[in-house]
Length: 197
Image (cartoon, rainbow, N blue to C red; front, top):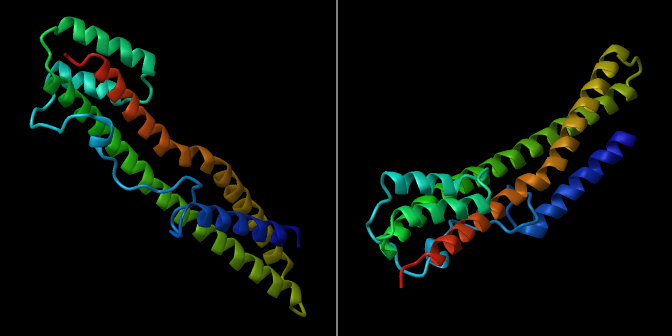
């Protein structure tokens, strides 16, 4: 009975979270699910056809990496600017757009992963529910199959543990798109500080 109560509470918690965020049953996060990011929101001039190549592309790739702290990103940009004093606004825009494209690609992968994650949680919840139903039927039988009941109880305990662990990890997973959005904005601000006048 304890496990049935847990399962019902867990499902209600998941349902409340999903409803709080949106009407999308595949979106379990409290944060609203937003579509594609727009570089125009972060960069003041329209994108041009210039592509970041060579060292500029390498800089953009480094700026997009989450493991590169913002302070380190600022230092890399400052070093690049010092080594290339003739940079134009279009050059900086190309660097931003290249970094932005990488960040947006990573963000899309995370969003798709969250949807897969939510679907796997729903499937696991359905599996747990089916196991509880089978357990109830076994308990109600005239001659219960105690071996099957023991195996089923172990399976339910394991699946519920996985479900709970995944629910705890969901908080971090759901924050990742927001972290990536903030990083894209921070990179834009770093580059804009060096915009030629």
